[in-house]
Length: 193
Image (cartoon, rainbow, N blue to C red; front, side, top):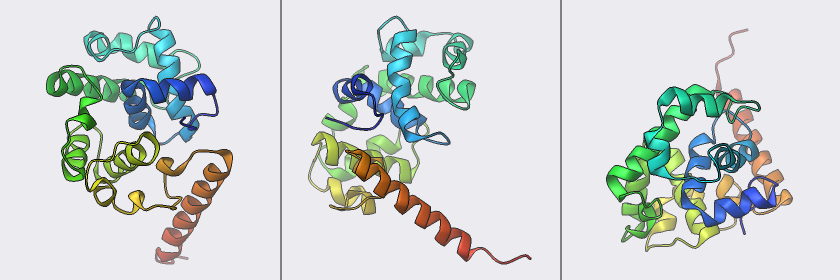
């Protein structure tokens, strides 16, 4: 069972509906992780109880943006993130015939899995590696070489990303790691004072 939102129903949706997990990963930027991964649950409710890539892709962009912007907004940047989700749904339709799980089930190895994820709109190298690690560590999606493809995020026993969170304790460890990385990055900035 995933533990990404603190809400049992939202986490169950992420574990059972591949599109929900993918949308959560798309939204996991510039807002708290729990909020990003709960948004697919809220989006499903707002769309009448169905999360379907064809349905989302077919919505007029302004209508989807309005769904994202309704209070409480699904993201800090509802219009742009609605567009990003819609682009990902179009990619799932065009490349995988609407089967989100085919992103990973069609991969023969970790290298192909990473390439499949990186080909999605909004998935740069780091986000793609984190998603590969999340699939491998928490959902058992482990084609040969998945951990190598995930880079540092695939390391066993690490607490680097959402891929490593399965309890409040591991959430705290990941947050500590991220704070340490930010502090290290700030320390490397030139002193302009």
